Figure 1 (cartoon, rainbow, N blue to C red):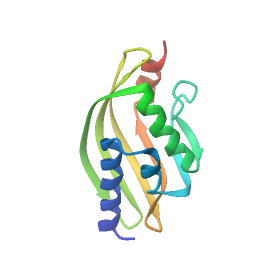
Figure 2 (tube, helix red, strand yellow; figure 1 turned 180 degrees about the horizontal axis):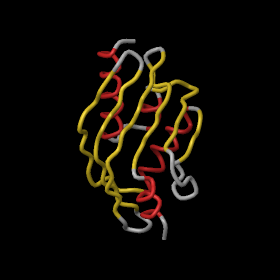
Figure 3 (cartoon, one colour; figure 1 turned 60 degrees about the horizontal axis):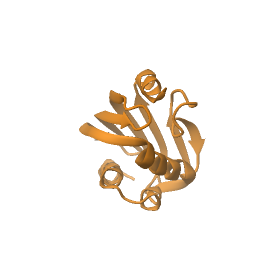
Figure 4 (tube, one colour; figure 1 turned 90 degrees about the vertical axis):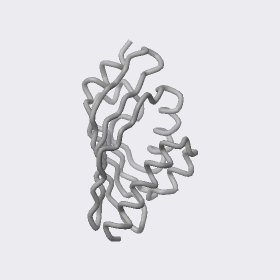
Length: 135
């Protein structure tokens, strides 16, 4: 793939996530053996941690739709090369169970294979995320 195609796929991924597309629709953008990683306290929120397979994105979509309220999302930039795209932004999310707000910059690194997302790595303020999710 080339940087133009990777940029298009990264934008498509963000559009589907932001539009409330179904989990299956979003997962269709990913390889069956997707490498999923959001480093942090994996005992607090179910989507945090290292997982493999499309089930990770299916669970992420389902869990975030039921456990959080998206307050704000500001995409600052998307950079793409021949094998990856990096999305920089700022996210505000309210945890339904606690009412606490997560307000954090983030970077998402997507790598691609065969015109699909092969890996997803999200870097955010994992301490603030963990604290907001604790009762």
